[in-house]
Length: 539
Ligand code: ADP
Picture 1 (cartoon, rainbow, N blue to C red):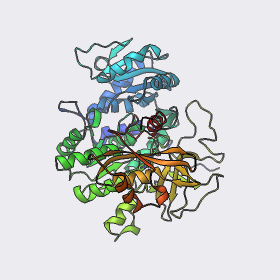
Picture 2 (cartoon, rainbow, N blue to C red):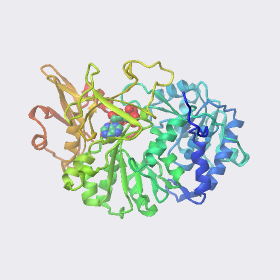
Picture 3 (cartoon, rainbow, N blue to C red):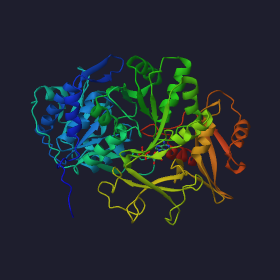
Picture 4 (cartoon, protein in one colour):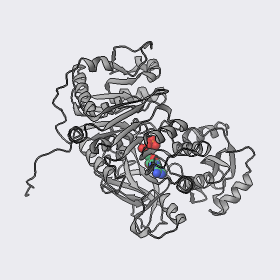
């Protein structure tokens, strides 16, 4: 074999940070404090603090390969950990603060976290489980109130450690194959499983996020990840923003619509990213209390399907460009993006929104196919539904400490996403459902997602979730659970509305009205809970 003669230059995250220090020392990272001002500092300060953080980690006995947990909202401290932990050669394990206690205990013990960095306001969530954590040697708290009583063993203060740490440090990420982060899937289906991301995968993923084919982030952008940093590495935005010196704005906890609207307006945010429920809330807020959000160039949405009606509402009523993307924790997470191509020039608005509501084309770096039950590849004709399988530069090859099995990986090296999709002749994908959420009625498939999105485009419906309920004759039938916008919504009217879009056998047999749809830890509609509620007769 004849090897190329390029420098041996590993794809490691230190190069992202070094580039930011050289090129953009004066650009800033901001954090909105709850009920307080926006704190800000420069990339130069950020760089120096990360050096200190690496020394802190070393002093705490963290060695390359060790897992270090974070239990935090979005903030610049959390971004420091996003870099500092991997640059010390260790693995940044972002814990989902919204998981139930038993799952948190399971995940922390499974990952064998050595230290956990915790946001002051979240301490009460860790206190009750601290005694069950088998491997944690220290808890390091940041952003705590001065007078806050904290009952955690081996407790240290982040700022005190940072103040006494040295600013010189030699990065310890030497090999691009080293792990840099560990993320557990949020368990929409089953117990959480760990995805261990390498430096190489995250650097390549960062280039993708920076490319125009995905989000095209540049120095001019003001990027606000409204996706929590504990969800799929905040979709890679902190790394991408740092690489090109974009201003980063971290919103305050809880992502309340009015606070988001204010922050977007005051910080002149150009790119904001979040799940559909967040943008649904923001839309209704902006209808009630209009604000100038014309600064937004890309409202990125993913994590679950963005209802077409909401895309239309944003674009038509608010003039906001919506960019729909599909991803998974297992893909670090970006897989596809639905921007319009040259072939769509000249289309009318309605047809453009139809395309934007799709999950879109696969980004460079991710290869995909759809297959039938027997694993046979299916055509890309926009109609044939199949299981979506992917492989690529930042796709998981095995879950952490679990041997690859047939449920998740194929013999010929593809990852089975568990999503069911069609792909059209232009390579645009449409997710029809998750394998586990499809309603299988009389041998036919009914897409719960399609029903939900259409229901949510009805003016009287705020939210809708469709689940399969057992049925003797048909196997399964759809039940629609809705949150109405006004009292007395009529089931017949909703079914008439659906009939304009779907065959009769798709119509829900029943409707249940609830005050709110239960959500998973990352804000997706939690159908596991709805199914359990149904089984208990609570719907
Ligand atoms: P979890 O599996 O715990 O929900 P992830 O955030 O990794 O955690 O979820 C990935 C899944 O979310 C995908 O497999 C898909 O089902 C769903 N998803 C993500 N983005 C979209 C989207 N734009 N449209 C529809 N479904 C999506």
